[in-house]
Length: 73
Image (cartoon, rainbow, N blue to C red; front, side):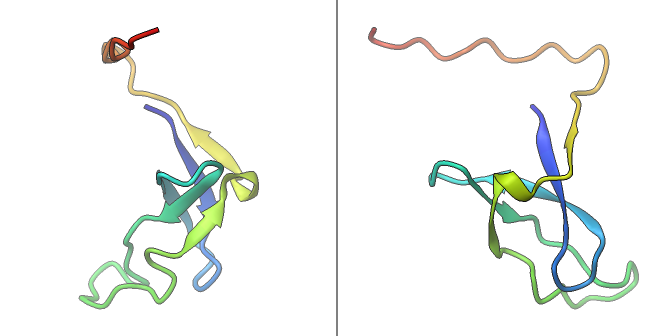
C-alpha cells in the first residue's frame, strides 16, 4: 500500500494521509507534536485533498501485496 505524505498544516512535519471514503481526500493520521508528549497535534484527523501530497510512501521490499478483491463485473 502506498500512503501519501503531506506537510501538517499545524506543526509542519511530514505525516501520512489515510484513505477515506470520499474520493480524492485523505485524513491526516494521528500524530503528536512532540515525540514524548501525550497530546495529539491539533491537525490530527483533518481531511485534506490528495492533491496536496508531497510524496508517496513505497511499499516495503519483499512484502507481497494482497490480491485485488473479486468483483461482479
